[in-house]
Structure formats: C-alpha cells, structure tokens
Image 1 (spheres, rainbow, N blue to C red):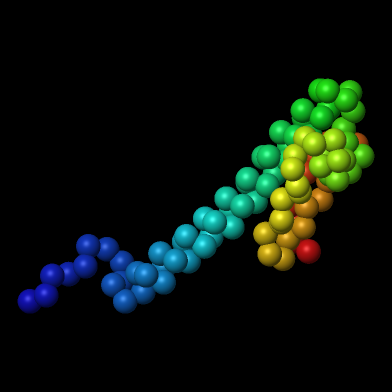
Image 2 (cartoon, helix red, strand yellow):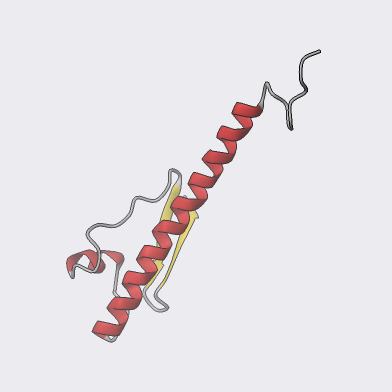
Length: 90
C-alpha cells in the first residue's frame, strides 16, 4: 500500500504553500514599507524639530533614497500632523 501523506492533501499542497507564501509576502511588504518610512520620519523629526510636510520631503532632504512602492492596489497615506504612515487599500 502507498504511504499516506504526513499532512494535508498532497494534490493541493503546492497550491496551499504558494498561497501562504503569497500572503506572507504581501504582509511583509506592508510591514517593510511602513517600518522604514516611520524610522525616516522619526529621524527627520529629531533633526528638524518637526514632521515632514510630505513624504517627498524625506527624499528631498535625503532621509531616504526613494519612496517605497506600495503593494498592488494599496496606497501610502501620511498624516503630517502626527507623523503617522499607513498603507491602505485604494
């Protein structure tokens, strides 16, 4: 008799795995974007004594090389009053 698979359905296992990897990648991209931006915003605030007026000001003053691309279907929202960055659905 053939050995039973250890877990899950052997036919859908590759699809399940790829779906999980895809979800992980999307979550990781969201996290990386906001963490890097938040660090740059905090550094800007410490050195300039205020939050940047826009995220482009971080690039102009060379706190970051370029603004990160938001994940597909998402956009970066920045509040200059609080210095908070969020990635939200378009």
